[in-house]
Amino acid sequence: MLWINKRSSQATIAALAGLMLAGTAMAAPLVVRSAGPSAKLYPAGKAVPDNTKIVLKAGDTIVLLDGKGTRTLSGPGSFSATATATAAASTGSTLNALVSGGGERRARIGAVRSASGVDKNAGKNPNVWYVDIGRSSNMCIADASTVTVWRPAADKASTVTVSGPNGATGTIDLAAGQSAALWPTSLPVVDGGAYKLSWDGAKAPTALKFVVVKPTTAGLEDMAQSLIKAGCTAQLDLLIQTVALPDGNPKG
Image (cartoon, rainbow, N blue to C red):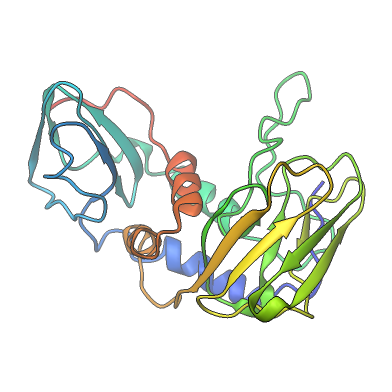
């Protein structure tokens, strides 16, 4: 069960959702990940014109993102830069679940249960803007006053100790069953600030660096570009996984 503190800003959530969902047709497909012999030709952050034929060698893998979602292309082969429109319908609702938080104190986000009643998303970060306390990374945020931390395992109560610039510290108390909580007000987040999170049972402290981004650009591709430039890899990985299109896109 996710617990969302009522201090969460509805306006901020709406702005973030708009950032990812609006204007998706305006930007060209974007390379968000690449590996293999042709990686230098297709670096992360490169926009690919719609009419481009992407030629990959054996061992090449690139991930493309556009308004429909992400596609993984593996060589050898020749591929179209654009995906078919058949998978676009579900992208909006999927993204909406990923970026919405709401102001309710107890809100289930993106819960998917199988016929056995098991939550398929258990242990998966439900929101691209939530700080995964177990993953060291740059963390992109739009509003430093509404930073939310999240933990994958919530069966036990835990206190997270946060240390920041100039030796300042704060704590985050998580009750049993509570997955998410707001950042401590006693330790404000600053742009470019480095912080460490620790708690009983952690193998090592989690290192975070916050980067404030402005939610003013439109389009999923623009959001991914911002995450790439800021080095917010944990959020980029979650975005890629969440909007992945089905396999089987035809070679062009």
